[in-house]
Image 1 (cartoon, rainbow, N blue to C red):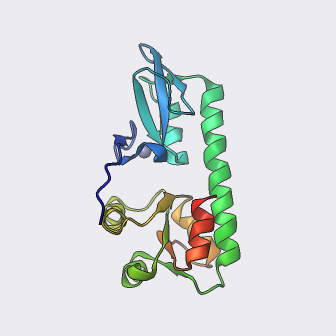
Image 2: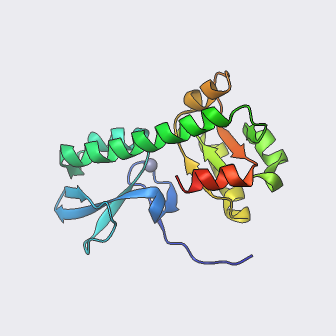
Amino acid sequence: MSSTHIPERSCIICRSKKEKSKLFRLAKIKETSYEFDKEQKKQTRAIYVCKSLNCLGKLAKHNKVKLDSQDLISMLNIVNKANKNYLNILNSMKNSGELVFGINLLFENIEHVHFIVMAQDVSKKNEEKIFRKVNELKIPYVVVGTMEELGKIFNKEEINVIGIKDKKMAKGLIND
Ligand SMILES: [Zn+2]
């Protein structure tokens, strides 16, 4: 397996390490003021935050990171839109027989899984387990919605992770 180096950064809120593309970049303007660097190209120092409602919510109350409310709204909109798209697609795929859900079934079927959707509020322990697997097997993934929202798709109380077995469906989700 190739070992191409993908630059990683830590979320200023939850400290989890992710690829830069999985995080929002906030470029430093002065002291505690930052602005949303959507294209991740500004030549300034920067901090990063997860593309999750949870971390953005905490960022809004952070006293060492001052952001224009317009910037915060832009980021929230991006997350909401992405979440809604993924949840809608998963919902329309739920009877296809191509989805496995829950960490145990996911790992049992891992060699057939081509894409992974993980809830934002999955436990730290499971998050580490899943990240170790996706990194090891280079399975593309996205962090979307809450365990409750993922559960709702399958009429369950909570689901922490969903794996997509069908290659074409997985591709559709990746390009979304
Ligand atoms: Zn975070």
